[in-house]
Structure formats: structure tokens, C-alpha cells
Length: 262
Image (cartoon, rainbow, N blue to C red):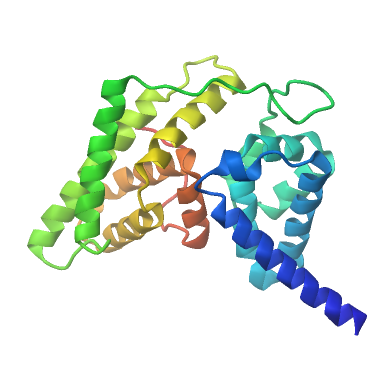
């Protein structure tokens, strides 16, 4: 029947689109840029409709929206079009971070174009970036060595806590470097996100596994004094890493999700 064939075609199209969007996380600018505004608009409405009508695919659709809105051009389309903006805000009601993005109108180069004037590539003082990278790699190596689990012995506990300490120090330094001064503009906010995101992306760390480790540590019951720092680590990663944002969608943390504050 035509209806059945259409449903099958839509299901296949959604799966193909989701696979392509997920694959774009490594090179978002190259793989998500260059599309016509109307094509982006239709794609966003399709994903939103699919996630609303097919509850079993709601989480997958929200994952797509989170990734797409990490790209400036897709976010621009979403904020300029009232229908899409309202529709996505309602659909992403359980993701205040995405709603905040939609509420922050991007500065566009022209009224008729979604292409903003390219921002200069963000830069960080070399010494500071090296310090952050070193701490991140030390944290990653410890967590990876423990199988991304907090551990079951006293020795593992101490080692895992040390790994989390390195990660906390890295996030603390990153948030201070990327902090926007009072009175900063939306373009300053965007530049800060670009800067933090670039550092985390270039480290090529398995952020979904890091979230797994944080889940494990938080739920262990043996390091409750670390709960606030775990929440800060997670909030900072969620602010700057689109890959971590997707991981949080797929595995929501038990701690409160709030703005990072050292």
C-alpha cells in the first residue's frame, strides 16, 4: 500500500540522515556546511516531526538536533525562522542547553543569508593549551586503564580519584580561559564556545566513555565529596563538546545539569 511504502521510506530516510549527522561530529564545519537554507529548514522539521510522531525514535531525533545546532549555519536557520524555533523549543523541552542556544539569536552577515561573516579561528596561549591537554591526557589514560569504571579496590579508588582530579583541573583551567567578561556580546559567547570546543575536539578523547566513568564514580558511594566537582566537570564538557552533549542525551546523568561554575 502507498501509505506503508511511504512510512518505510521515511523510516529509512531518517536512519540514513541520523547516520550522516552522527558521522559529522568529527568534522562539523566541513560536513554540515554549504547547504541551502530551505534544505536545512526541511531537514530540521523532518527530524522534529519524526521524533514527535515516533516516540521510540525521540531520543535519536533529539541527538540529531543537538548535533545540528552545534553548527552556526543550522542554528541560524533555527533562530531566524519562528516556526522552526518554536517547534524545536517545544521538542527539546528537556534540554535547556539547546533551548538556550535557540534563544540566543546569532549575528548574521546579511538579512537574506544565513551565512555569517566567518569568525577568526580561536586561539589560546600555547602554554595554557599544553597544560590543559596534558591534564586531559593524564586523566584519559587513568580512566582508560581502569576500563572507564571507578574501580572496586582501594588502589583503584585512589587511582580513579587521581584521574578525576586531573580532569577537574583541566576543566577548571579551560572554563577560566574561555570565560566571557561581564557585558560581553553574543559573539564573545560564541568565540568562547569555539575556543573551548576546539581544544576538546583536537584531544580526540572518548567523551562518551568519560561520561561513563563519571556515572560510575558518582554512583559508587565512596567519593560523595566529589559530587559537586563531577557536576562541574560534566557541565563544562557539555558546554564546549558537542560529542559530550550527545553522550548526555543518550545517558542522562543523575546529578543536576546546570551552568558550569568553578
